[in-house]
Length: 278
Length: 316
Ligand SMILES: Cc1ncc(C[n+]2csc(CCOP(=O)(O)OP(=O)(O)O)c2C)c(N)n1
Image (cartoon, rainbow over all chains, first blue to last red):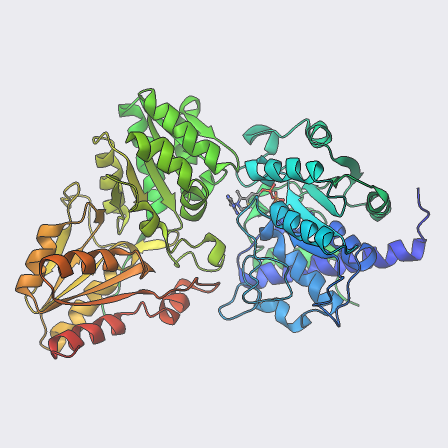
């Protein structure tokens, strides 16, 4: 286990809180969107963009940057908020989410926001796009890494497992997937719609190095990502146990907020809970 | 301009009708891919849980399984968003269903750009084009809740593959409980003899609005609801080409491969006349309110009026 400075963790926690507030403000203002699955992946994104990934907001087209793909594209409010916090996009843009003419489209759309690595929003494709980027990295003898966040419901797509088989066969150790395991999909609980368990064994049997963590613990996430970097000859996946709607009590494990934005009152209540800006 | 009463979304009318039909037809089975709350198949699922299967986010598996169910004498209704079901499982439909001409009913919601804020990944602007490639599929796009109800009740009586597009937003009410439709037919709503306006689905009311505007300018237009896209109602088209000066087609679809392109091909073979098409010109749309998107992509009443006037003025 790495020892991580307490100040570092506190810094990340404070960023995560800001991101959550942005997600609430953005979806609230838009009147539509997917708060539940945005809130569950906040720590994953914050760990990657503020601690793990090699990237430079001043140089978004840097060839050696690590690549990030949000395969579960509907969680994009969290990604936009993180990109704004990093300085890739203007913070003022956030409240234009989903509005006509905004670069912040309802799902990640590279035509409108070139800093995104791919357009996603149809589930099941991001890991395969990551495969292509990882292959290119190998061909070009580069050492950057490809990170792909997938959903647990998304893992029901056959294409995810086509990609899984390919990655291990081709020893793509420069690819690390993260599954946001919040136990829900659109129509309800994963266990009731189409269970994906035993999911750790599935990935292991597909030849992946598997880490299982609390997806809201920065210590556990950082450790897993650092260990994943050391893995040679195998792709890695971090199964991140998360809570859908994390951080807002009335949204937590309440799948109503999968694809429903908070009302004005709910927005205010959520922001109160998350702590207003000083 | 006439104020339209907004009825239920056609996807909701679909779900409600399907749940009613479950009683009469024990062979009906319903398949969805984690969008049952959006497509409204969940209503059937609550009433007939033993005949409802949520395949999870796995459209290809769902579509091929529908083929197997149909081959075993069931009447599968298969639903998701049009983008995901058709585009993701296109080849499964081709081989599994079209290849054996099986009795599967594909009812997909979120057709067109009226999907709005979700953006292009969820907006199907190519479903009609894709579905018309399957030989002998019947393709229907009902305009409102009453047309949808009729379509769903009727399609079960015909043992053949069917594609039905439904929409996300509430649909302007054009018909009523007693409106008579014809399977594989079209419906002439205004009988004018100057110029013809054709539409279907959520743009049909624009054709009617355009009709009223043209009337004020002394132009009598014929308005036809082409709710059946395939088989193409050739007789009605021939008559329109003979009896009126030309045809304007407005649709919430790509121009390439849409109804307009089918009409143009057919009439250029049989009886060339002036044809003006309004649709999405070689682009994907984006996030925004449905009206903002209609405006941006030229799907407006004004545009229909202008095109009709161009035809009347003998221009090109
Ligand atoms: C191919 C495809 N089918 C259906 C959808 C509609 N859809 C959007 S989100 C969602 C549920 C996603 O579940 P999960 O991956 O678990 O995401 P989370 O619960 O984290 O939001 C569905 C079915 C889609 N975007 N893509």
